[in-house]
Amino acid sequence: MKEMKYIIIIVVILVGGALLFRFWALNNFNSVLSDMDKENTPVYIPKKVVLDTEATPVIPIIPVEGEVVPIILPKEILLNNKIIKDEIVDIKKEDGKVIDLIFTSPAKDANLYIGCKYSISISSSSVISSINMSLYDFGTRKVQGPIASGIPKDITGKDIKSVDWKVGNVWPGKYFISTLNINGQELSKKSLVFNINKIPEDIKKSDIEEFCKNN
Image 1: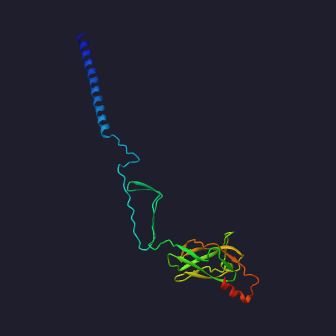
Image 2 (image 1 turned 180 degrees about the vertical axis):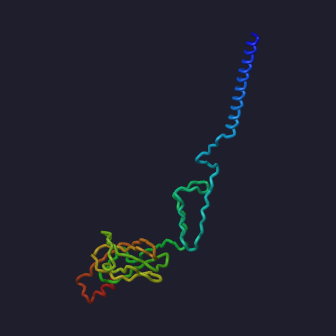
Image 3 (image 1 turned 135 degrees about the vertical axis):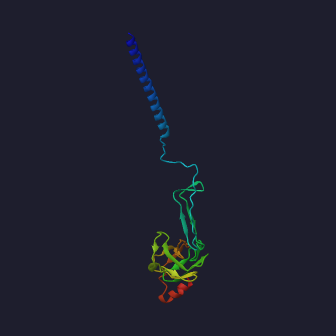
């Protein structure tokens, strides 16, 4: 009996020691894993980083003397912390003045005659060195070419104030003169409306020159 009791006590001690050892081993293993998790915590970096401060882009502008420097900004750009859309900065030439020109002759409702010579007079705020003008039918608004109208296509000079004009062979009617280009600039300035007539049939050829002087 005594031997049986000793055996049971030894078995209990062995089983209890094994259980205690197992509990201790599991506890230490879990503790080590916990420490490893703390040390190896993954850091997630977002794909897009939003900055609190907005940088102001610097747009270098190098001025060129006597030249037009157009600066076209992008459709949307941050400038001085403000959004600018579709803005164009245009530095104009110093000599880019708008030319103010008027026709002083032919006068309104003046009667001009085919084949007679007249003076197309102009007054301008600037010196005119080149001018392009054409004759227009007041009713149809059709342009009459240089051959038909008698007005030269391109007129140049140092200071143009008048242009000699021999009225061409056009249909009688109401007309006006309009500029197309002045000093290399596209500019439309119109004269007053005047009449172009045929020389009366009862005027002799020998008297046509005198008739034109008087009309």
